[in-house]
Structure formats: structure tokens, C-alpha cells
Image (cartoon, rainbow, N blue to C red):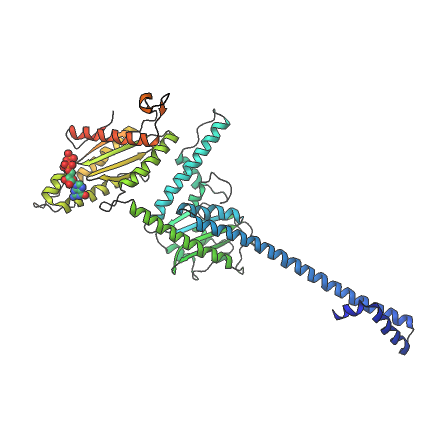
Length: 465
Ligand SMILES: Nc1nc2c(ncn2[C@@H]2O[C@H](COP(=O)(O)OP(=O)(O)OP(=O)(O)O)[C@@H](O)[C@H]2O)c(=O)[nH]1
């Protein structure tokens, strides 16, 4: 820079040159030429340096801009994780929004879930999002053309999504996140993969890690990043990212951003699970471990709405233990309690995953069977009746003989075409019942059928007319 300054001051150059000319032996013109060449060289080198600095500056500036954009996106996803109102919303933010925001070609999530808590909550959440997607598809179908075939059923939508091998963040019906969720009974698989400690693993896809990328075409990925989700020193899962770009994740990359995101995701996931557990405690019957009446009423309303939307049949069963008072009287109240617990377990064992059983009160249980016609509901009711009759109750009898009990059941199917009579509704014309009215009527009909079963001699199933 010093030379640059000297070369830039013509007055000084002239006086220096004049001095040199006076005392030098060569021709003044040659001397001037030599000096000129030297100055030119200095100028060229200074310009070269300047352009190098400019390039460096441009690179730093674009890096800073990229980092700023990256920070903004991290900030956005972090806010989304913190604000997620439920475990389902949180998992969707990680599996869908995160991938879109960071232009990833695959995002999967493995969670250690030994008690099947996350599995239960997330499968319910998935069913709701799949149903919403189905409704959207139906609306679109209807607006496009009424001659098109009806939208795919929930089951076919599920199997289509879980079989899909497309890139994870490609547009889908909004339901494929569930296929990219791996719920593990233990932490064994993660211990086998993170052999060098719970640290992010970046690099080219490793066939040993394929189990973490279920639902994704791993062959199409150029690089992957596995982020262990650590909470209180334990690994509760793994967030797995994939890119077609082989240079996107490499072993030498800084992992600060990713580690911070993984730490936040782990805390949010743990909090969401605790919140779901608390919710469940408030919705579970303490004696039998099945749901309580509060849960049933909320869920029944949802199922009635879903049945009205999808026009799928919905059956309600009411079950009452026969002569239960005698059990209490003959064997004591704790024996009665043990019988109720056993009845709850036997019922649960006879139902499908999305069926609902709740203790309705006393020795009465209520069941909801979605997507089931009345005939199927009656068959299920009879299967439950027989299973209970053949089960030995966990009660010590005086004769040391197993205690057997019987139950009576009433079955009713929700009426899709149910309309309120004009006079009752106070409307100008008959209108469709509201979900609350339909729900009340459904339970009332099951109760009347149960009463009829009791009247007809107990240990039987009666369906509503
Ligand atoms: N052990 C126990 N008993 C209960 C519980 N809740 C209600 N009960 C008893 O269940 C009995 C129900 O008796 P009833 O309504 O007369 O009916 P039942 O004896 O089952 O006769 P039917 O229903 O007509 O076959 C009452 O004695 C209640 O006190 C409970 O949580 N634990």
C-alpha cells in the first residue's frame, strides 16, 4: 500500500526522478522509462491485490447472506417447534415443514416409544389429518366433476402412502409423514447405528442406516445427516435428513446449527409427550384403565361428525354386567372392582385399534365401532359376550372354583338420514340433526336395546330397531 501511495503522487515522483537524473550516468529518458515500468508493475500488483480482496469480500458477503438466510429459516422452524400445539403438530413440523424449508429430499424421524404412547397419539393424529385430506380430495372431486369415482378410502390412502417410495418432501396428500415415522420399542437400533457416541453423523448414505430412512428411496440420496435426539442424557430418537446433493452433508461440516435444532426438537418432543400423558390421565378411568365417560363424549362427537362427513356407518354398544350387585354382595367390593378391571381388558382384547371403549359408569361400558354396519356391530357384541362368559374372573371364591359372569349388550347404528321433525326443531323445514343430537340419540337407542336385552333374560345382545 505504501508503494501504491507513492505511485499515486505525481509531484513526488517528478522530484525523485529529477534528482536521480541529475546524479545518474544513463540517459534520462531510459531512467524515466525504467521508473515508469517499475511504477506500472507496482500498480498492477496493487490492482491484483485489490481484486483478490474484492473476491474475498464478495465471498464473505455471500456467505454471510447465506448464513443469515439459514439463521432466519432455523429461527422459523424453531418457533414452529416451540409453538406446536400437540405432539402430532410437532412431528408434522419436523417431518414436513422442516424438509420444505431447508429443501431436503428426505426427512424421517425415529422415536423410542416403549409404552406405545407416541404410537397411540400419533396414529390418532394421522387419522385426523388423513380424514381432512380425504375431505379436501372429496371437495375437489365434487367441484371438478360429479362423474368421477369417489375418493379413496382411508385404508387405501394409508397403504398407498406407506408403500410410497418417492422423495419425502415431494407434494403429497399431506398424510405421508406417518410413513416416515419409525416408532421403536427400545433404543437398541439407535445404539447399533450411533456406534461412536451420540453425535451427529454426516456423510454418504450408509446401508446400515437404511432402517432409519423407511418410506424413502435411499438409493436416490447423495448424502445424509443423522441427528441423535438427546434428552436428560438419554437418546429418545433420531432425526434423519437426506439430500440428493452428495456435498450437502459431509463429515467435515460444522454441525452447530443441526445440533441446536436436534436439542430443541428433543426437548419439545419430551414436553409434548408429557402433556399427552397428562391429558390421558384426565381421560382414563382409574379403576379399569379404559377411557372414562368424558373421553367417550368428546370422542363420540368426533366420530359422529366423521361418520356424517364420510357417510360410513357408526355403531354404539352399551354393555352391562349381569347381576353385578350379587358379585359385590357375595365376594366383596374389591372382588367387584377386580371383575370390572377384567371385563375392561377382555373387551379391549376383542376390538380393533380405532374402536373405542370407555367406562360409562358403575358396571356399564360403552363402545364405539367406526366404519361398522349394525350387523358387524352385533357380531362384535356377541363375540365380546362369549369372551367374557368364558373368562375366569380374578376372584377367589369360597369353593375355589373359577368365577364366571355374563353381560348383556345393546347395539345401535347411527341414522345417517336422521332429520328432526319440523315441530320439534322449530324450523320451517325438516333439517339434519346436529352432531350432538345424533350422538344423544345413538346412545339412547343403544341404552333402550340394552334394557330390552335385560328384559329378555340377560346374557344376550339386542339391537335397536
Ligand atoms: N365393586 C364395584 N361396584 C360398583 C361400582 N360401581 C357400581 N357398582 C355397583 O354395581 C351394582 C349395580 O347393581 P344394579 O344396578 O342393581 O344392577 P345389577 O346387579 O348388575 O343387575 P342387572 O344390571 O339388572 O343385571 C351396585 O350394587 C353398585 O353399587 C364399582 O366401581 N365397583
